[in-house]
Amino acid sequence: MFKFIAFDMDGTLTPSKGKMDSEMVELFKQLLAKYQVAIISWGKYELFQMQVLPHLGTDEKLLSHLYVCPTCSTAMYLYKAGEWQKQYSLDLSKEEREHIVAVLNDAIDTLWLRPERLWWEMIEDRITQITISTLGQEAPIEEKHKYDPDFSKRKKIRDYMLPNLAWFNVLVAWSTSIDITREGVDKAYGIRKLMEVSWVGLNEIIFVGDAVFPGGNDYPPLEIGVTTKRVFTIEDTKEYIRSLIV
Ligand SMILES: [Mg+2]
Image 1 (tube, rainbow, N blue to C red):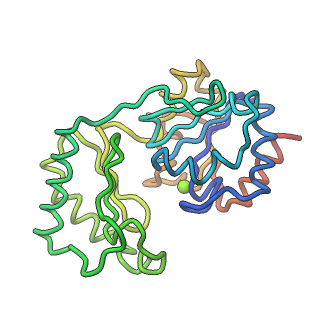
Image 2 (tube, helix red, strand yellow):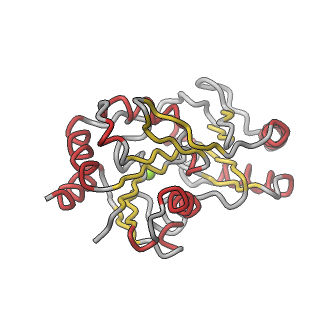
């Protein structure tokens, strides 16, 4: 019934910032043989290069069915002539990115939220979005879980910044991060971009994600009427893929 299966990445196809396991790789390849497939993630392209792409091999026929959509489809990559090629990238300008970073630093200092210890850099410029990881990008998972379990610290940062970031989307994300993109970018936007590029219709797509609940970053596609499948674990996703490839 569906022609196009679009997935979230972290928590759905792979562990958070982790590699796709070999069983998933096999299932995913079988899926690519039958369907058009997309992965829409808030993560940057470099994470796809680590978590997914090198594990899928180099079969051009299969890989030509995959749409790689980092930072919520503000960039897109397709496999052509033996390599992943950037189709477009809706970059923030240098001035916009500098402005966002200045507002972020001001918020953290004014609110006394600069941590004593940082694991690698706090602010990451992904060109299409700025992400702040309040404990640093390499903070251990246990530290991340302890830092802001009720989101209150990051909501404070967001509320402080909002008046100065009127044309941007400020999203409190998983564990310690806040993502800032151009206004209107979310996974519904990601699906719309996908439809533009692939000519697929809204009711031919199913979107599979682990955060399909109000406030979750996989919820927006459901709000624009995309059929959505919520999974709770990566094993759930495997089960669902098996049901599609029989
Ligand atoms: Mg997820």
